[in-house]
Length: 307
Ligand code: NAP
Image (cartoon, rainbow, N blue to C red; front, side, top):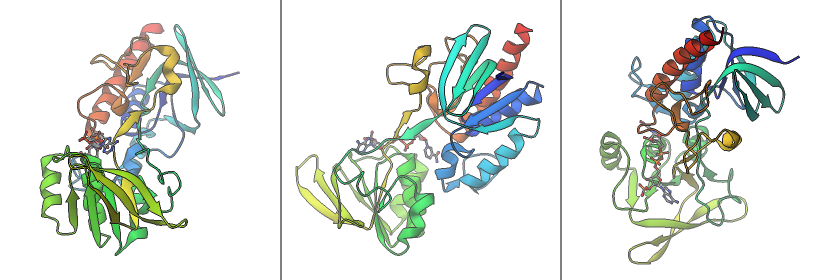
């Protein structure tokens, strides 16, 4: 016998946890499934200062608070990697590597996963100086020199975080303008521990077998090649949606992001999507939370219509 729920939320980031809160508070039976710890990308974020209610809060601390809220009305949490979602009309079957569940509706909040640079040395030195998480690994580089690759919000906010720990941060960006919000740019430009290398691509991560020693770069305007010494390389070059497992549902655009309407409904009745995994303008904790509330409420209306 499969366990049966009104709503299964896949992914327990800020969107998923909010959806679980709304649906369970409306008296639905709710299961959140995540392949790791609740919180999603909040766990890789040092400081969050654009989520109202907190002047500044550590990402993992906000995740914990949200988890406490999300389970306050009886929503359950299960570890597992979702392997398939089958649409059987009014019933959906969700299979994980551990279990199979029956549910009336599904809310997908699987978010996105960091992109890799795809250069020689990246795989080899991953965990030996190459990192995708300053909060997790920054402390290993106390008083040493690191490189941050990328020019978006993640690269610049994590460069600022690292500048508080390490001796020097070199941000290497492929253009001559940052994509990050102006407030972050202003802070980074004013920080004398942060240097910028513009119009430049990293072509190789170098090491001495045990640890990173630097990066090889090429200026994409002059073709000049250089080596920059560094003990650590933090890569923040964007994200890809985590949607491979939903390909049978035909709910994504050509790049894999899930298309929804304003009610967070996908093209499959009873299946909703929220947060970063959606086609959307602004990917933030606050917008994921908004999506989660809308989806939780609309899942309630959908499930009620079936009874
Ligand atoms: P992003 O906004 O997609 O930025 C990725 C950066 O990496 C861009 O500067 C891009 O350069 C560069 N890049 C992409 N591919 C590259 C490659 N192969 N080699 C070198 N550079 C490459 O990703 P993100 O910064 O991770 O942010 C993801 C989302 O989360 C965004 O919506 C962001 O606003 C949000 N976020 C918000 C906050 C905050 O509000 N504090 C913090 C973190 C993230 P180009 O600029 O040339 O394209």
